[in-house]
Length: 296
Image 1 (cartoon, one colour):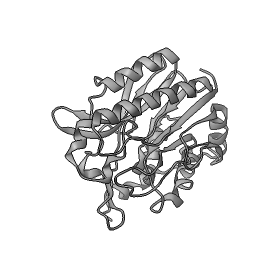
Image 2 (cartoon, helix red, strand yellow; image 1 turned 90 degrees about the horizontal axis):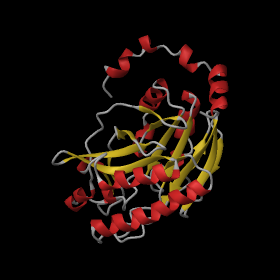
Image 3 (cartoon, one colour; image 1 turned 135 degrees about the horizontal axis):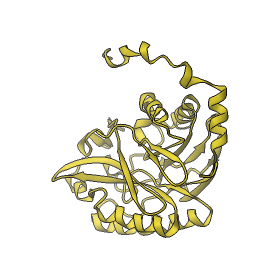
Image 4 (cartoon, one colour; image 1 turned 60 degrees about the horizontal axis):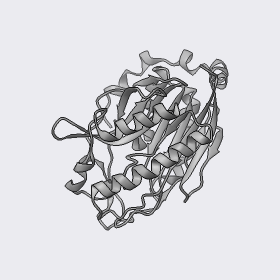
């Protein structure tokens, strides 16, 4: 396994009006993202991550049972299988964030991890679920209407090119899971997101570089772009980026364009940073018991 890995991050707009059918949303978004994955491969990417619930709009802007029909089983749903075939063809690792249904009617915000031979390695389910209004028009991040909190812990997946972890959007505000991903061996953590200007944009380039520094790994942060009709609750401001364990931005996308971002990951730098800053050696877990016992 080489010390040098090319990372591909994909940010894109949703081109279909929210009133259209689930089938049209999926068809158009999947077609678009397959082209973008191929573009990432052509640019040398070996690990590629898509944005949060990539195959449609950020429907959590409203509370509408229509969107339950967008959910699929993982790994037995058609979208996971389609991207397994694509990963095998291109010999790339794909982090695939989709809306998951388990059983009859249990739903999660999930990312499947597919290895470069097309094999399904497992999934991460978003742990921290927001319920936040935005403005006075009834729109917001109404995620508790759609998702149960994750129940699979903080797994790290040993892929063909690197050991990767996943955090999803709102998770990034919680350092505890970011630390657990490091303790579980992550060399890079991906955070596929859907986040708008005016609420937490000022934290976008602050929190995740801090996770990278505190835990000695790379972070790939992905955000979609544009306004999504009919809600238009805010501008998805893109600016997807790769940041290294020193907190330095390796590559960054524009604010408002569909874009494939390529960045170089150097595993030797991870070792160098961890040898210098011995945060894992010097941590004191035996003193942290109050973290799980004190109420806010």
